Image (tube, rainbow, N blue to C red; front, side):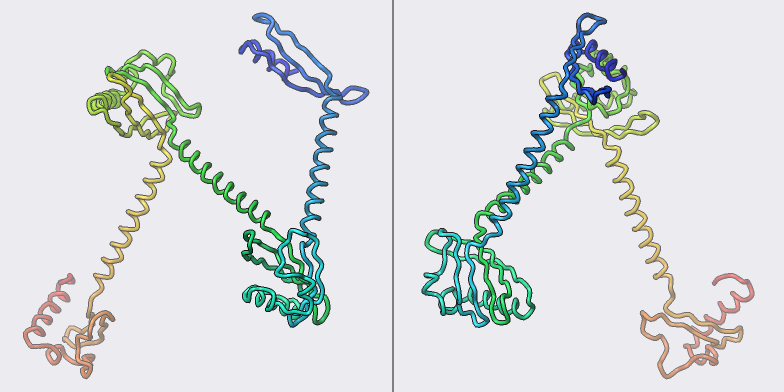
Length: 401
C-alpha cells in the first residue's frame, strides 16, 4: 500500500507514467503483477495491473537454460583445451619412442615417422632441445609433472606452445604439447584492454575530481545570472532566489569585495584568476577554491570547489613537518650543549673526577691522570688561578659562574 501511494504521488508530481512490479501471496500461490500508474487528472490516476507470473516464470526458465548452456559450453571448451596437439613418448636420453598428433595444422620439426629413434638434439634447435631434456630429467627425478612454455619461428610465423612432461615409467616420459598462440594473443588483448580500462578510469577520476561543486555566471557588476550546483555541495541561502541579486547583498562584505576585484581583474586581463575563501556553513568552516574564468566581455564563470578536506590534510602535514623540524632543532641544541670536558673538584682545587666527550680529542695528555692532583699542577698558572677564583665565587655565592 505504501509503495502504491508513493508511485501515485510521483506520477502526479511529475505527470509521467510510473511502472513497478509487486508480488502477492494468494491461496493458490505467488502472483507477480506489473503495475502502471497513469496520471488522469490533478488528483487522480489510472492503475493498469497485469498478471505477469507466467512471463516471469518463462524468463527465469530461459535464464536458467542460458546459464546451463554457458556452463556446458565452458566445460566443452575446457575439455577441448586439455587435448594436446602432439603427444610423444621420449626416454631419459631424449630419444623419440612414439608420436601421436591430433592436429594436422600443428607444426612439427620434421616428419614424426622419420624422427622415431632420433634424439631431441637432431630435430630441434639446441636451446629448445636442452630445455626439454632438462625438464625430462626433472620429471623423472621428482616423479612430478613439469610444465613450461616455448616459442619458435617457422615459415608461417611464430608458434607458442605449452609443454607438459609427464613421468611414464622409470626411464620414459610422455610429452604433451599444445599450441597456445591464440590463447596468448587473447590474453594479451585482454591485458591491454584491462590496462586501457584502468587508464580510462584514472582519467575519469581525474576529470571528476576537477569538476567544480558550484558553477556561477556573474556580470561585471557582481550580479548573479545563473547557477549549477552539485547536490552534495552545502549552499548558503537559496540559489533560485539569489539569481538577479548582487554579491554585495548576499555575501560578507570582505568576501564580496574580493570577488568583485577578481571579476574585474579577470575581465581586464582575459586570464583565469584563482583564489581561496572561507565560509561558515552549518557551524563548519568551509574552505573553497574559486576559479574566475572570463566568459565574454562583461561576464565570468566562477568554478567553486570545496577543498576543506585537502586543506585540513595540508595543515596536518605542515604541522607534522613543523613538529619534526622543532624536534630536530631541540636534539641539535641538546647535542651542542654537551660539554667537551667536565670535571669535579673540591674547594681546595684538587681534581676528584672528570668526563670527556667522545667526539673530541682528549684534552689531557694520555700520560697524565689529574685525579688527586691540584689544579695548579695540571694547568698553566694563569688559567689555574682563574679557575680557582671562579671556583671560590661559585661556592661562596651558590651561583653559576
